[in-house]
Each structure stands twice: as C-alpha cells, then as structure tokens.
Length: 127
Image 1 (cartoon, one colour):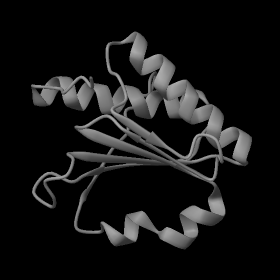
Image 2 (cartoon, rainbow, N blue to C red):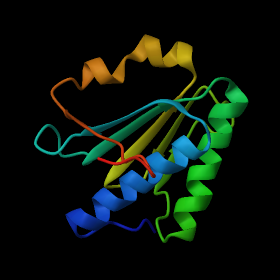
Image 3 (cartoon, rainbow, N blue to C red):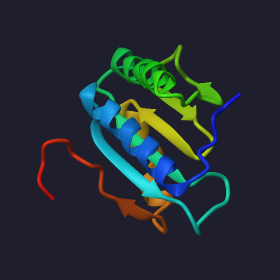
Image 4 (tube, rainbow, N blue to C red):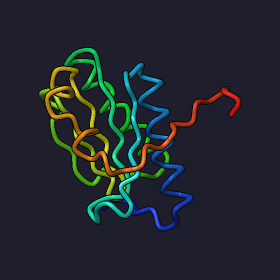
C-alpha cells in the first residue's frame, strides 16, 4: 500500500527529495508543478527528462528504490520497461520522466500552465 503523506511539510519534503534524486541521476529540465487548487488528482507533478530510453528507465528505478528506503512506496508505475515515459504515482505527487522527444510532444508544463512553478531545492546553493 502506498504511503500517503499526511502533512504538507512531509509531502513537500518528499517531492523535493524526489527532485533531488532526479538531479542525482543527471536528469535534465527538472520542473516541479504545484497542482493544489488546480486539480484534486494529486498535489504535485515532478517532470524530468532523461537523455535516452536507458537513462529514463534508470531515473525511474532509482526514484522507486531511494524513496522506498525513505518510506515512500510507489502506488502505481507505468512505462519502466519501455523507457520512453515513466510515470510514478506516489499518491500526493506524480513523477513523469520523459524521453526528450515525448516531453516536447506532450508538453505537460503547457497543459498544466495554471499550476504554480515551485523551485527545486539545490543542495549546497545559498538561497
């Protein structure tokens, strides 16, 4: 069963942690959209790109493994075998890892343009 994040602080921390894991795996164009007030399906979309099918799969598998270690289990996943578009549903946030051609085709950022763009915390960077 998926771990639902009860407090907004825990939820925000988990999605920021997921963003950091994407960056650790050298994902490109990592974007975090706050969907609260826009839709009830989830609170955040985390969108990232890999450079190849293998890279996309690796990012997705890394996220599942590392977040599980922190107590966040993926509720549903799709696309891990193909590696073109990996979708990981953690209930309170959904991660989309795209091959660059599919990301430009689907343009989720444009589709969800009403959502607030959230800054991804960069470790070691003064804010």
